[in-house]
Figure (cartoon, each protein chain N blue to C red):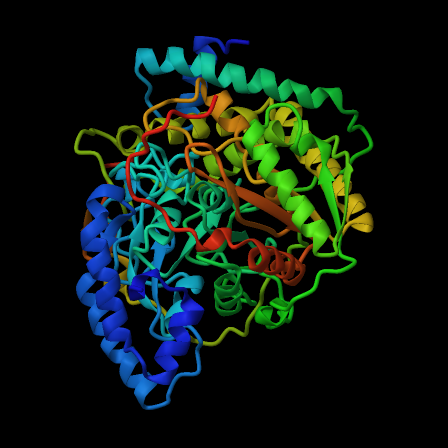
Length: 495
Length: 94
């Protein structure tokens, strides 16, 4: 067994006992990065020297008994929209290709305080806009289960890095499914915490009312450990909830008898691939066998989530991305005569195609004459979607279904129009619109051996319930133990 | 639904973007398609529904007006494309 193949909690025990050092572990990860990174392409920036230095420092702390963090000495990768002091943070955009933040995002500083070792910054869709990581300005990332396929997105680099053992765990960000969908496609565990559970300070904004940072890990136990480290109030983010978080590892106990699970018929009906449906229904049977009370019900608002999401997220994005003007930081055009031309050329040269499309859509729905018809309408539909979920949670503790309607698509294979691509987010966006937490974990494989993810949505700040159900599922199925092949698949995609 | 070329050009101006002829044409189709899909929301009667901008109630965060540690000028200007004597440098605005 190689060190890089283990989980954070296994390695944490070994580090604590003195069986291994953080130095050896970091070297093992960097060796792995050297071996597979050419094939996978998870990282935009690799911090080799810094990582080795930090591992040495942390090991001294461990030796001296100066750290109590269960993640001390564990390697981590951060999505490249999470600011890291002194380390380039690009959002996978030409606009920020040279941006070196003078401060840390709160989530990053909490991981530093937990004595983790940063390996690098991971690839993503530019400004998190996309579902395949193909919208990166820098490079393509490949799916470790079949390198002809995408890792999903937008946190595709983080998910691929965890699945290919190029890190022990990672952080991503989730605005419409950007942690959960790549976790599903790469066969790893991904959590979008309740909106406000994790500080967004230093997370480069896409859509502020929807964005949330979340862990991507090899199993549910690691997910709980990382959530413990990053969740909690932060006065630098006025939307960060001032609540006392429980110790999430306390949820990792056997027994889910009596837990009520609702399965929306819309989530297993038309438009869902046969193999995904089968895997999800099999998972529901497993949960039933474990003592959960499962039944089908209807979430009629499902069909309205996508249009509401694309209006709201694009509107917020057009406003958030107005700051990129070539004045204070980031890219500035070389061709300009006056200020207006400097703005326009900087933005037209600095942003990629998908980002421009979202800015245009957002500007349109916020412009006078269309504000009420589109933006305000979407805000009202958001209320209706929220109320329908609230009502469902009177009856159920957890809402279960697939993370995505299908498994990962092939690289370069554009899934039709932008609208067709947006429809792939149908099961993930409701948790962003409503703010509810959602956990994705591996629950099977299709005929091409591509992973399928089960999604569990919970009540606000009900992460413990999700982790408990997820933990019990994982312990009785063992899908999380299967490792990616890192090879080109020989099979044809399932029709 | 296709959005008119004039509208696309107007919105691009608002967004401080310059689109090529080809981009303008593509956007008018693509944004049109998303907007016609969004018309689906009109199936719902929302006349008595309150809009929801944020999921959790927003409260201002106050602190006492004491001097705290903050970033220095050098750090603040470390990413600035063009600067002079502690100022951001841009073309003439008047």
